[in-house]
Amino acid sequence: MSFSSFSKDHKENSFTSVENRFIEKYLPEADGDAVRAYLYGLYLCGLERDFDAKSTAQLLRIPYDRFLEIFTFWEECGLVQILSREPLFVEYLPVSAAVGKPKPIRPEKYLEFNRELFKLLQRAGKDLKPYEQQRVLEFLENTPMERQAFLLVVEYYVKKNGEKLSMAHVLNAAAKLARENKYTYEQVEAEYADFNRHEEALKHIFALLSIYRKPQDADYAMLETWLHAGMQTEAVYACAEALKKGSLGSLDQLVSELIAGGYLEESSAREYLALRNQRAEAVFQVARKLGVKVQNPRPYIEEYAEKWLERGYDAESLTLVAGLGLRLSYGFAELDTLLDKLYAAGIVDPESVRTYCAGQDKQLKLLQKIQAVVGVIKKTQTALDMLAAWKSWSFSEEMILEAAKRSAGAAAPLSYMNKLLSEWKRLGAFTVSEIPERTQQTAVRQTFKSEAAIAADERSDREHFYAARRETALRRVERARAMAEKDAAYREATEKLRGSQLDLAKAEMFDPSSLPAIQEGVRAAEQQRAEALKRLRLTERDFLPQYICAKCSDTGFLPDGRACDCYKKGQP
Image (cartoon, rainbow, N blue to C red; front, side, top):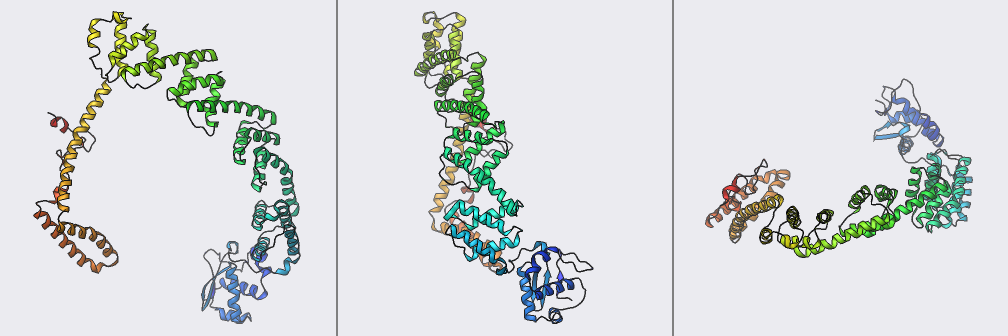
């Protein structure tokens, strides 16, 4: 059997195939013996013959110790995997998948490059640490970027960052260029010409936003994205002016909003921003009036303010209606519903809105008077609509308050008031003196309850009934447990049984031979506990709740969700 073989990923052929990547990347850097040993081993992979490593080294006239070093080197490069060292047996890996240690780099190859690099770094007062130099050379070895192109990247960041220059930053920038297939001096020069062209624009944007740092690569990339989308630089300035202060992230959100709307030129951008500012101000005014906190006005603009302003409501009218909404505990959604109602009624111009809000204010004051008589009533639009209806029936405030006095103590005062006033309307009684004697004497004593209120009372009675039953059962259990806990023998046996569960689990997994002894201890503890309970005249059943109804366990509901009939049976 040969000392080497193909891995399962390597296709066998009737000829020895050398991957181009090996010739391009590894062959120039390896010495002759290393190349001969690699190629001969590759050749032997395709033979079905016994040819061990020592025989191969002797045939190639390479000392065996040197032969071992050679394949250690190829393993570091990720081209082979050593499966055994004595005897030596290696598995060849595809060159395209090599991710091993970097191959040795000849310093003399980069003498001129290193001199130029050190000169550039001296301008920034920076030294090149050995590990940084190694990373730079590895980058040049593994990418086709021209050395002069890399030096141009360094020169750009020396000018840009000065003493704050970071070689890690330079390498990241060079790697980004390499990913974009920009390898030549001309390509890199064109890339940084774009950066220099945008530098003044970014400085102006930073000044408008009160940002006091130097532009970074990501900032240039963001500006390039906006311009590539068709946005004029002056339109970006307009967005920054509109924000006045903020970050590039917030500017990106605003610019993206304008790009989505097609406002790419300065004139259209400023026109849109003015309208947007008007809508945003309307949102903030309404939010302050409602007591709602709004950080980003855009969703509120799109859903509410845009519609309100297009319908003709001005900021003053919206603020008035919002003030009414505050007293009714409204949010934006409820206020929008109210404005829809006003718009349908033709209440749009400032004067009609003021008149409406003044009328609603009177209604709210009347509602407060009713509250003083009957108790707490929610301030809702429904309540205000009922007041408006009663007034439309030609009832005076005096008659409405009289109905409130007679409704004091009712479960639903407004509903009872509505019943009284509708009856008086039917009878033609519009003054207190016209109210029939029958209703004067009995109405106040009648307590009106809606079906919902009656159902709620019944549900409450039912819940109290079952709660009392369960409480009785649990109290018995607690008394039995307290009695048992006072007994020392019972407590000792119970503690042993609790600990034995863990002991049994450990024994089953780690020490099965100890199981019989643990099980015997469990049986002894169970016997001790049983004797203690017998002495106390208790049983294990006393520690479980004994419910009166076995069907529903005193919950009132059967397992299938139906109500249990034990409630009716338990009632007197």
